[in-house]
Image 1 (spheres, chains in turn yellow, blue):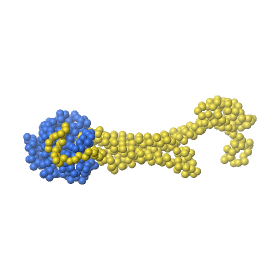
Image 2 (image 1 turned 30 degrees about the horizontal axis):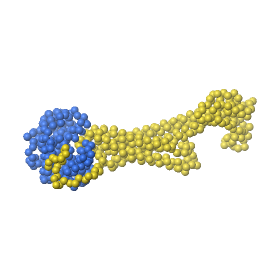
Image 3 (image 1 turned 90 degrees about the vertical axis):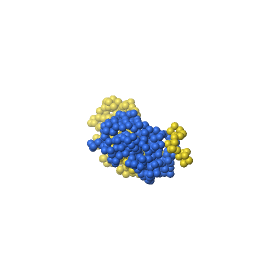
Image 4 (image 1 turned 120 degrees about the vertical axis):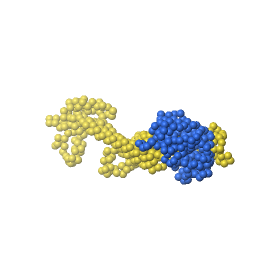
Amino acid sequence: MSRTGDEHGPLVDLGTERPQVPAQARNMSPIVPRASISGRALVAVVAIMTFLASITTGTVLLVSASAAEWQSEVASEITMQVRPQAGRDLERDVTAAAEAMRTQPGIVQVKPFTKDESARLLEPWLGSGLSIEQLPVPRVIVARVQPGTTLDLAALRARVTQVAPSASVDDHRAWIERMRSMTGATVFAGIGILVLVIAATIISVSFATRGAMAANRPIVEVLHFVGAGDRYIANHFLRHFLRLGLEGGVIGGGAAMLGFGFSESIAAWFSGTPVGDQFAALLGTFSLPPSGYLALAVQAVAIAAITAWASRRTLFATLDDID
Amino acid sequence: MVRFENVGLRYGLGPEILRDLSFMIPAHSFQFLTGPSGAGKTSLLRLLFLSLRPTRGLVNLFGQDVSLLGKDQVANLRQRIGIVLQDFRLLDHMTTYENVALPFRVMGREESSYRREVIDLLRWVGLGERMDALPPILSGGEKQRAAIARAVISRPQLLLADEPTGSVDPTLGRRLLRLFIELNRLGTAVIIATHDITLMDQYEARRMVLHQGRLHIYE
C-alpha cells in the first residue's frame, strides 16, 4: 500500500488487481427509504383529510354561488300591494300607483297584476271559479329595478301613498337579510369544518412523522455517525414527507374534483325526484366553476405544505431526542 | 489532538464507570485500548466520538472544548472522526458501495469524484464482488469489513474502532490491521479497542488499559 496520485491519493494500492471503474454514475439509493408501511399510512391519512377538506370547500363554494344568485334575483325586484279601501276605487288606485312607479328613476319595468291574474295566483289555496270582486283581495304590482342602481325607496313610498294611501312597498329586504345570514352560517360552518380537518391533519401527520422517524431511527443514528448535521438529515426526511404529502393531496384532491366533475351528471339523473329538486333548489346545478377547481388544487398543495411543515417541526424535536 | 483532564462518567444516578481519566492522544499516534469486559472501553470511545458528554472533567478535541460546542459544530467535528462499532450499523436499504460512500455523500461530494476510491477500498477489504449486495445478505465478517471501509474512506484525522477484527478470520484480521497501520502512516490517529492479544502482539503500539474505571497507559 502506498500513497500516490492526486491530493489525497488512493488509500489502498491494488497494483495489478486494480479493477476497471465503470464510467457511468451509479444510481444511488435515497437516504430515506421510499417504501415503508408508515409512509403508506401517512399518504392514506393525507388523502382522506384532503378529500374531506375539498368536499367541504366545494360545497361551501356551491352554496355561496347559489345564494348570491338568489339574492341578486330577489334584490332586482320590488313588489307593491294595493289593498281595497272603503270609499276608494281599487282599479284607479292600482293605475295611479303603477304610474307613480314608472316615473321613479331606476325602475325599468312595471307589471300590475290584473284581476284574473290575481285570481290565478290564489287558485292553489281558494280553488278555481273564484269571483274576486266578492273578496277584499289586495292587488299586486311587480317592478324590476335596473341592476346596479340604488332605488330611493322612501321617495317611492311617499309618491305612491300620496296617490294610493292603502299601498305598501316591499323590497324583500327582510328575506334577503335572512338569506344572507343563512349563507353566512353555512360558510362559517364550512370554515369551521376546514379548520378542524386541518387541525386533525396536523395532529395525524405529527404522529405519523414521529412513527416514521422511530422506524428510521437507525438511519438517523448512522447519519450522525458519519457526520451529518440535523439540517442535512431533516432536509432529506422533509423531502420524503413533502413527497408523501403531495401524493396524498393529489389522491384526495383529485378524487374530490372527480366527484364534483360528475356531480352535474348525477344531479341530472335525480332531477324530477323530490330529493333531487330540493338539492337543486339549494345548490343550483351542482357545477363548480373553474375557479372552484383552482381553489381545490391550491388547497391540496396547501395541505401537502402543512404536512411538510408539521413533519419538520416533529423532525427537529425527534432529532434532539435521538442525539 | 485529544486531551482528557480528570474526566468522569456515570449513567444517570449509577456509580461512576470512568474515573479521573487524564490522557492525550497525539496526532499520527497509534494505540490499542484494552481491558476486561465492562471496563468502559465502549463508553470511552463514545466520549471520544462526542455521542456522550462527560459528567465531569474537561474533554478537548481538535483544540476545542467539547462542552462549548453546538450541534452543528459537533457534526462538523464528527466528519473528522471515523468510527467502527461492534454492531456495524450499516443501512439495510443501501448497497455495500453506498454504505461505504456515505461519508462522502454527507459531505456533498459528487459521486464521480469518489467512485474509484470507494471501489479500490472495497476490493482491498475483499468486498469487490459484494459491492451491490445489501447488508442483510452479507455475512458478519463482510458487514464488519464494510463498516471499517466506511470509517476509513474519508481519511479521518482520528479513527476509533471497537473490536474491529472480532468477526473475521486471523488472515483477514491481519489484513485489516495493515489497513489501520497504513491509515496511521498517512496521518490518522488510531485507537483500536480490542480483547485480542494476538492482534495487539502483531504491532508495537501504545497500550491503554482500562481497569475498574481507571486508565493505565503503557508506552
